[in-house]
Image (cartoon, rainbow, N blue to C red; front, side, top):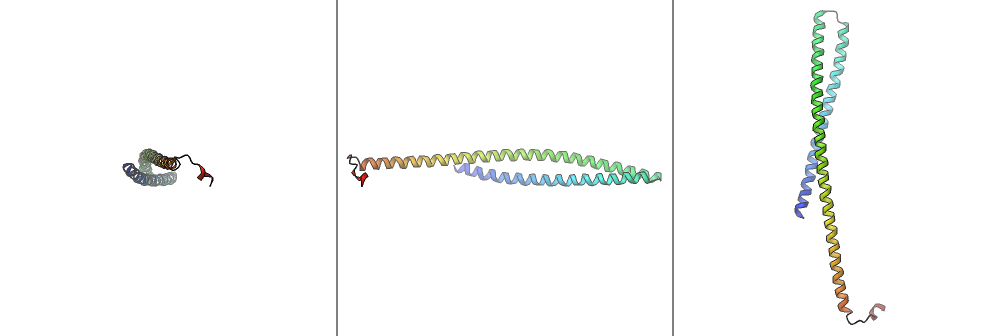
Length: 145
């Protein structure tokens, strides 16, 4: 029984740890999505500039920079996919741990309830035994008193 309580405490600790890790991943995902959005806006601005530039050298520089931005967006998208996968795994871990916790809690509750029932049954048997010894002579007159 004590081992189950220790297991329950350990599981609760694991749940808190995994929730913290999940929050970190979600925070990282938010940062990556923000960076992707900012890169897209920057790309849009540079693309607009490209339509106004007449100088060949500036066009070349802007095209190179636009390509660089696209590569960065692609890297961030890969990073986002990896984070989404990690988040999915974390959620599965949490679901498993929460399931284990609920199962142990349910088992402990059932065991406690059964012990209480057994205790009440024992007390009832003791009361029956006392009652039968006190009134073994068959005199029920004290019931009417």
